[in-house]
Length: 443
Ligand SMILES: NC(=O)C1=CN([C@@H]2O[C@H](COP(=O)(O)OP(=O)(O)OC[C@H]3O[C@@H](n4cnc5c(N)ncnc54)[C@H](O)[C@@H]3O)[C@@H](O)[C@H]2O)C=CC1
Ligand SMILES: O=C(O)[C@H]1O[C@H](OP(=O)(O)OP(=O)(O)OC[C@H]2O[C@@H](n3ccc(=O)[nH]c3=O)[C@H](O)[C@@H]2O)[C@H](O)[C@@H](O)[C@@H]1O
Image 1 (cartoon, rainbow, N blue to C red):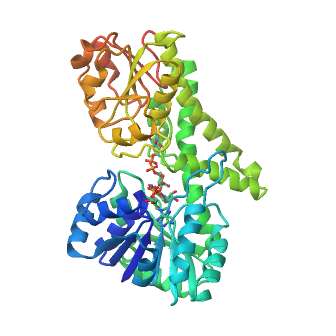
Image 2: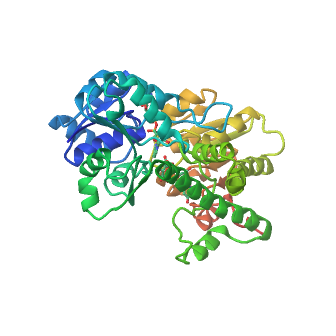
Image 3: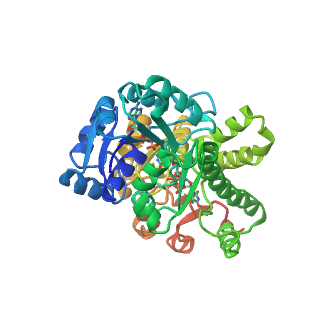
């Protein structure tokens, strides 16, 4: 089949490459011409395992191309996936849907024959009918433009695998047995035929499925981090506790790693967007638990700053703090709402001299936080530190030999906010190590 993917960021570039991998002829479209040039050169414009190889393979065969023209996209196919960004609106908890409506408005005037617009972007429930009305009013093909909702559940750093082998496929339509349904069933035939759970539903349920899934994932993380708060007061060990809870198959250990909490371009803004939309729908009482999940998450970040004060004193001015990690999680260069950078910036604002190191995300971090000092090499970054903060659990941090660092720092103090460092090993090498949710030495 021929199809386009409008918006080629973390989601869209991955989706475009994976649809080519499934045998389709794909035109990716993005309004950012620099991104289009990088993609056409056969590379991903960001760091994502396995994606470069897939883009290289399919741009070489010619099955995958990219353009910056909405008009060219409209003419290329009659199936268009939309995966543009839907960030949190500045100063509000709600979604900014301007990119989505902009993409639709730029595409619509060129839709002169029947078309299916399948939206993958995450939105508040109730967006689909608004988008359909707008598209049908602006497109020469009118109501022969059908809107489908196809929420995406991929995780960055597993994006290719999650797209090709999803846990489930959700397809939302205005009417059952529509033309749009047959088109999407054909597009995803290989995934459906491999036995993937495929749920066909209405627009509202498909829209809600995404917000509800991310809200649950965020709440699960905050639940274990709330337990970490109780562990810190009672001398218990949250990692052991999570293991014990996780053995109960009704609870499960996946997605329940205690630590610094969730960041990224999705869980925080989707949780808040879901709460805001529930408020508009007069379903405010239903989302109290989500508000608390957000509050627990914010407290984890504050806890690290409190521990830094405990170790370095009330006045942080002139203190040298090295932060390990800039990306919001390991194996990505994505720094959107990164807990590590949030803490690094706050410590800088309190007067500390903050050096950040990260295997992949320093270029992105430099642009957003120009005040911080950045050093690529882990050992050099840690030189002369009064305190080290382990904030993103990259493999290279977890496996560094603490003895190698013991003579490089001013004092041997480290706070492990992700709980992946081997405490005994660090203590044997002469370090004072504190881990979120676990008893400190001597307690
Ligand atoms: N990043 C992820 O892992 C996942 C993201 N999502 C959702 O997918 C959507 C996209 O997220 P990301 O890919 O992370 O965002 P992103 O910011 O990486 O990519 C969005 C892309 O859309 C382009 N764009 C904006 N307006 C456009 C327009 N009018 N026409 C064409 N292109 C336009 C931008 O230039 C950018 O390249 C969001 O709704 C997000 O919540 C859903 C599941 C996973
Ligand atoms: O809508 C989205 O964009 C995506 O958001 C998340 O994916 P992602 O943000 O890539 O990353 P996760 O692996 O879920 O991690 C999110 C944050 O939670 C933290 N986390 C995750 C898991 C955990 O057990 N504990 C924990 O603190 C991570 O460090 C990270 O900061 C969801 O997992 C995806 O299903 C969803 O499609």
